[in-house]
Image (cartoon, rainbow, N blue to C red; front, side, top):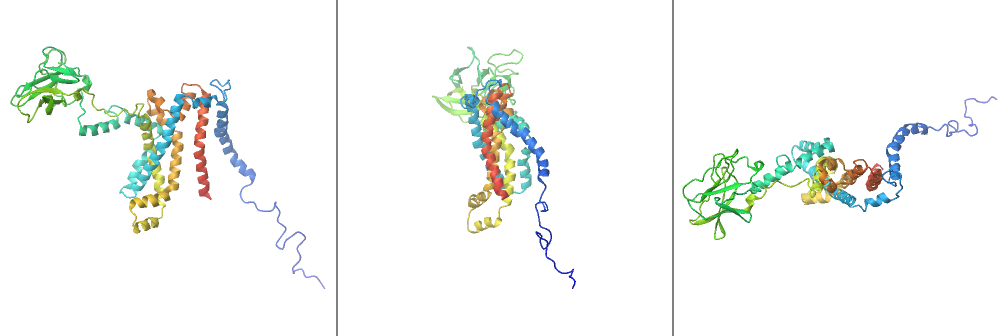
Length: 455
């Protein structure tokens, strides 16, 4: 008999019915080999080491030495951070930034995102709010340096404040103005006010000459002064008793002399104000409906106080809130866009079910919208905290040199101490490490959140 060649045969020793045994060499590899992975990762790791790891290690080392770098001081630079009064002011300012700015940015972003779902032209609104993100922080600092200018003619902030103030009360003031002195003068100064020497009668014109007015505070609407009109009633003129170029007669209204508009004039009888009038552009005034009798005419002290010019935004008191306002203007659009994306992902069924159950819009917002948006709100809030800890440009540009100690922050102080004239890179390195320690917890929080979302 012959052996059949086409029948099944036993596999050789160590083999398998389908082929030779699988070994680590023959097993198919998923992904690149370790050598290829290392080749691709090596440049990034090298750059990371040069730009991140080495500066951190060297900063830690340098922070242990003095300004010259030759004397070892140990933790002396870190002790200076918490004992120097200027440094403590800097830390206080950073604390204000961390508490106030992220809350304002997140809250405004949430409000804008919710409102844009309920208004027309929402795309245009989002574009306008987001537009500051296209401006660098240095350019934003220059813009707000002009916005906060103390002169209402230049600064938008004070222009708005003075406009609102003037809508409800006059702000025309003549500081340093005073009555003309001399025996021939009909008025005298009395406790900051100007009063007539003798009581005035109806039909008897009252002349009140004023001097000591600077040209820059003379109102633009001031017209040439006119002698008080005749007729019944108590009337008169308040004017700047000074003739440009010389000449003229003291105590008399000359053609080239201007009236003082906006002056408050009071008619006083028996110590009580019986009537009030306001001077016209030519300085003339007239009391209407005043009972017959003799009155003392008085210019109250309020006429000689400086006019309302708004707030000193760039002064030591308001400088930090003013810079935070600029920061909010830049970053509110960023927060709005992120939160609006989170709102778009919220299931509408949950909102409609709550409304059907009788919940008000506020209840829907507070108990459904905000809890569902909490991951996005946390992202925005933590991101803003990191940005506030690193803020530098806005403070450096907006704060004038005279108030920078009151507005200083850690990042700016680090630069100023190291390169801005302090030449103490030991203390500057200590500030850099201190700032890194402050930022690290929030960076770790973000990394953990990213890992949770990826799993």
